[in-house]
Length: 306
Image (cartoon, one colour):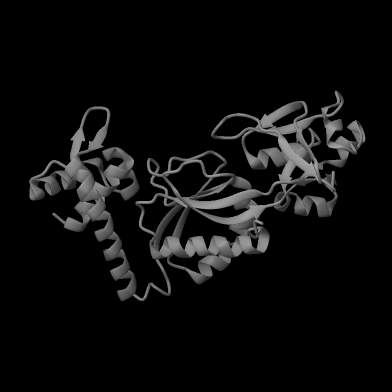
């Protein structure tokens, strides 16, 4: 039995709650993972996991051992990194999940420079607006807009996305140009709504101008749960949009979108990188997070709070 492989298999089973999922993330067969954990239990003479036909749960001894295994695996990873000079060039597979518009417009265009700097890092990037289960899906970190409501995660605030209200010229020619947000409630105006992936609810756009504040609700003909689809709907003239400025910038310059209510302000959307507290911040994860920080300092720096 390779003790390193056995400990790694055990840790992944604990994190995913499944021998099958652990095997998938380790690129091993389920039989191999099962045998490694059984051999580890035989060596330690302790039951680490309780198995049923439906679920795998860690025992009290297994939970204590898991915490030690995590530290040991982290130390081994750091030792290999330093001996192979990977401190200057971190290596390995990194699984991340990011919002689709942020990936398309900011992250992926900047990836050639990232890979030139860190050529031995393999990024597996999930691109969607859904909320992933970091532990269950064995994701190293997520980049998310809005408050991080899962208190079990470690979150680093990396940027603030300024917002604006936009519409396509085709829509404004048909419905007219509103001069005050309250006019959007009129029967002839429409908005495109965004459905939150966690709550599945449509949230109003909160706007303010000095002491005046309004929740821009409006009537919609379309609501979507994907940022790229949301933008496409606005460009097609289906209604008024509330967009992060980075999504609107090129379309504003080309004349495909026009900005409305320029003397009104949104609260900026916080952008964070989140990861599990028990997941070792390896060299490859650390440099990825720092890269995100650098990118957002250019595109949407963290606002000072007074």
